[in-house]
Length: 458
Picture (cartoon, one colour):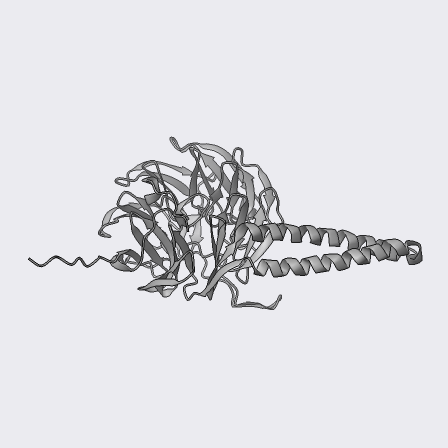
C-alpha cells in the first residue's frame, strides 16, 4: 500500500472522524504494537439523548435492530499541537486535555449537554450544546469569543433530566471554506434550523427551516453541498451556498455518514446496511452489509459485526452501475410486456417474443455481474472489534468491547490488540498517538511500544 502524504496538518484531528467528509483517515501511520500512555476517567459517563433501538420491529418482523442514533454514546475527541478537546453530555462542559499527560488544561461550561465533539479551526474551537447555542472558544485557554443561538427565541423544556432548548444543537459544527455550519432542533413540528454563520462574529448568514425532519448526527460537507443526518430518518442534501434543499436521500436512515469523491455512504439502517448514493441522485446505487466504511486509494474497507474486508471499489461501483442500468431496462421491458398482454396478445406476438429474449439476456448478464462483484473482494478477515474503524496510514484500527485492535490494511492480517474498559465507540489519531473513547466515558491514549535499545559492552 502506498503511504499517505504526511505534513504538519496531517498530524491533527480537527473534527469528528478527522475531516468534513468524516473519512476516518489519518495520514500519519501509528505503528503497532502500542502501549497505554494514560487514561482519562471523567466524574460521570456519557448520558446519551437516546438509549437505543427497540429490540425488534414487530410490524415488519425485523430483529436485532441497530442503534441509528448513537452519536453521543462516547466522548469523541479532536485535537492538534499536544492538546485534545471533547464535550461532555453529563457535565455540560467542554474539556481540554494535555495530549502528553491526559491532565486537564481548562474547561468551559455551557448551559446544557455537549453531545457532539467540537471542531478545531485556525486556533478556535466551535461547539454546539443542547442549550441551543453554538460557541466559539479560544483553543488555548477556553475563553469565549462569541455564542449564537440558532433558533429565533430562547425557550427551554425538560430533556434527559435537564432543562434544554426546544432546539438543541445536535449536528456538530463544520467549517467549510471559511463559513461555519450547524443545525438545531429535533421536533419538526416546532421547526428545525440549519444555519450558516460568520466565523468572526457568529452572525447568521442564512437559515433554512425544516418542518418534516429533525437534525441529529454529525454534519458532512463538501464545497458545494451540506449533508444533514436526521437520526433514524434519511439524510437531507442542501446547497451549501444558500441552504436550499436539493433532495432527501432514499434508504433506511441512521446518523452515520461518509462522503467520498462522488458519493455519500450512510446507515446503518435497521439491520446494519450502508447505502451508497451518487452525487446528484437520491436513489441508492449499492448497499453493503456493514457498520462502517473507509475509502482510500481505490479500496473500500468494509467493517461489520464479525469481519473486516477490502473491496476493489472502482470495479465494484462500475459493476453496480451496469446492474442498475440493466434493472431499469428490465423494468421498462416488463411494462411493455404487460401493455401488450393487456391488449390482443396475438397482435404483438413478435414484440413479445423479442422482449422475452431480451429478458433472458438480461438475467444472464445480471448473474454474471453478481459473480464478478464477488471477485471484487481483495481480502476478508474475522474481526471481533465491530464498534468503530479508522485508517492510520497503512494500519486499520478497530474498536471492540474491552479491546481495540489493529490490522494491516494491505492484507487484513491482525497486528495487535490492547485492553480498555467498555465499548470502543470512538477512534482518533494525532501527534503519533491513537485515542480511544468508550461508552464508559474513558479516553485512552496509546503510543508505539518503546523499543528496547541494546547498549554496547564497554
